[in-house]
Image (cartoon, rainbow, N blue to C red; front, side):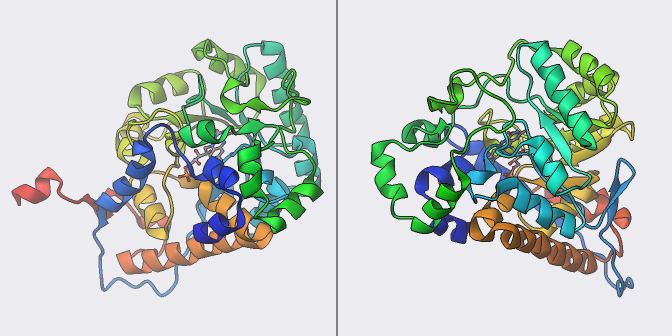
Amino acid sequence: VRAIAKRRLPRIVFDFIDGGAEDEVTLRANRAAFEALTLRPRYLRPVETRDQSTTVFGRRLESPVILAPTGLPRLAHWEGERAAARAAVANGTHVTLATGGSTRLEDLMEETPGPHWFQLYLWPERARNEAMVKRAQAAGYRALVLTVDVPVLGRRERDLRHGFTVPFRPRLGMALEVARHPRWIAGYARAGPIGFANFDEPGTRQRPTAHHKLTHRNPAAGLDELRWLRELWEGPLLVKGLLTAEDAEDAIACGADGIIVSNHGGRQLDGVQTSIDALPQIVAAVGGRAEILLDSGVRRGTDVVKAIALGARAVLIGRPWLWGLAAGGEAGVARVLQLLRIEIDTALALVGCRSLGELDASYVVRTGAVENVRN
Ligand SMILES: Cc1cc2nc3c(=O)[nH]c(=O)nc-3n(C[C@H](O)[C@H](O)[C@H](O)COP(=O)(O)O)c2cc1C
């Protein structure tokens, strides 16, 4: 699916989706960490029927895969979040609309109702945050996801090199390459200018601005902001982007109901720990006081099985659904979800489990782990 997306998208758009921060060490490590975990299958256990459903905050998901919040999905395909939301709901899951999304939050809920979540970035001004949260609440979003790993934007050098701006407008050098993608241009013409649909960044409506210069982030935010949000938001509140047991403790102490262990798909701090490596210590520290989810590098059903075995309730995917969207709009996102579903089902059978609930840490072992070497 990624290969199709790469052909379909202008380079500047593909790189915005695909790229990571600085040397992309973490981007690669996210895959390497999943690959370094091996499975310990158990055989001669009846697995003729299998069920990969789970519940998150009391809601059933047909499969433990949620669409992660991503900025500007309409760059991948002119229908953007609408197409993704339809595919998600049809496949028993939901999307997380981003503050930096390209579809108005009210429109998405009205046109594609579902138990969708809303992701929040904090501005320095509380009044702005409050207005956004109240809109999300009024529109019926089920859960609020506060992303905390972006006090400043990571240095995504592909974007810096290409001069990626919001609203999207390629520089002349890039425009020539964009012109080689007539099908994408036709969609873009249909979509109209693609920018942040949920807020007016002062001055940017008229003038494209470098992504890293935009201000929908608040480097001064502390735990007080989280406590304040807890008071404001009535449903489940998740904190996204944590990688340590200490931060998980703090989040729970401030009233968080859920934690998304994430390194932002390698787009923020380069050289940071991978989510799948950070997961066990967070699961141990939290001890069931909050629901734990994970993203960053999930590409295969076996990755999902590893994450669930190590204590996640569900996972989120970022780039895979954007690639699907670029490759085939709604059908492309649906295809990605269905492929994962088939792979999870196969992996469950092959490790000898009938349901996700049967998975535990005994099903996973790290290649080259000290215990193995000693044995
Ligand atoms: C193009 C793109 C835009 C993103 N925008 C946001 C965002 O606005 N807010 C957010 O919390 N995370 C954002 N993320 C991070 C994802 O939510 C998620 O953490 C990450 O993509 C997971 O890693 P994966 O892409 O390897 O699945 C973005 C990711 C991508 C690829």
